[in-house]
Every structure is written in C-alpha cells, then in structure tokens.
Image 1 (cartoon, rainbow, N blue to C red):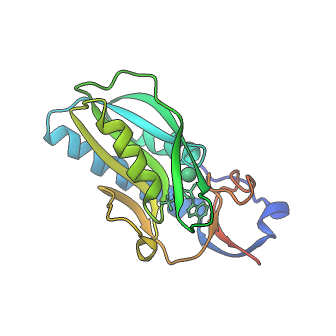
Image 2: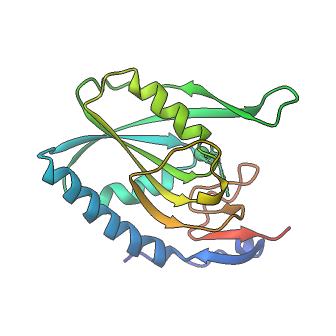
Length: 186
Ligand code: IMP
Ligand code: MG
C-alpha cells in the first residue's frame, strides 16, 4: 500500500486528521471490490466514470485502480454560486462530459455529498442523455447537511458536519494535495 511522505508545512494548518491516507486506501480497496461485484452481477463489463472536477480527481485516480473491469473516463464541472439575496446555492453546468453515454452504464464519482444540490444537478444533466443506468459513489457523506433528498449508491465514509480538506477537497483552492483528510484550524 502506497504511503506518502509527511507534509508538515501544510498539515500544520489542521486541527485534527479525520482520515489518514492509509484508512482511505483500505476503504477504497473494499469499495472497488463492492462496485466491481455490483456490475458483474448485472453482466455489465464496461462502465463510464464521470468525475466531478476538481474535488474528486484524487479520489477517482485511486478508486479506479481498484476496479477489475473496463472503464471509460470523463469529467464534468459544476459551479455553484450564491443567488441574489437568497441563501440558496444554485449549481450550474460549467463543463459537460464529451463521451456519448446513450445506453451506457454511468458511475458518477464525487468527493463529498453535502447539501445535495450539486449531485442533483449532475443527475439532471446526465438523465437527459439516455444512459442505461446512473449510479453515484461519493467518498464522503455529510448526511445531516442534506437539503434535497438524494442518496449515493456507494459511500466511502459518513462524516460529521465539519468542513474538511485534503485528498482533493479544498479551502480557497488549497489543500487538495494533502494525502489525508482533516479539519482546518479556524
Ligand atoms: P453540495 O452541493 O452541498 O452537496 O456540495 C457538494 C460540493 O461542495 C462538493 O463537491 C465540494 O466541492 C463542496 N464541499 C462540501 N462540503 C465540503 C467540505 O467540507 N470541504 C470542502 N468542500 C466541500
Ligand atoms: Mg466538488
């Protein structure tokens, strides 16, 4: 199992480490086997991964190597902004996938399921392209934060309601390169 060197210069900003890289890799290996078995049972031998960038880049790069089946890889970018004076966030499609997914089995991969607005938008866009199936896998799930009813089919870890960084997740575009996942000091 790959162990990355310590990152003392950036880890110093963490109040605590929630998940070490080793814990993440152990879970991804299980998740890879679960997802491979799920599609094998359905006689699906090729799936199309839709990576929601940028946050899930590190997660996808690692998880896909635990799949013992063929994958096609594409990515989608969603941008969220605060709309007017309302507190509601409105996700918008910033960059669509380019592969044809008509009659294909799609697995959406995102870093974290929080309020659920982002993935609701993703499923809406993909649903209009007539795929054979669409499943969702997230590394992290903050269940108590949900504002819209959406569930992931596969979840790496359920975590408490705290803002986390690392392993692809950013604060102000930084900390994506942390090998672990942690909570920032305020
Ligand atoms: P949702 O639309 O509220 O479900 O938010 C999902 C997106 O918000 C994720 O793809 C992340 O980019 C971002 N996000 C939510 N919670 C966190 C967090 O704790 N740390 C970093 N990014 C987060
Ligand atoms: Mg994101």
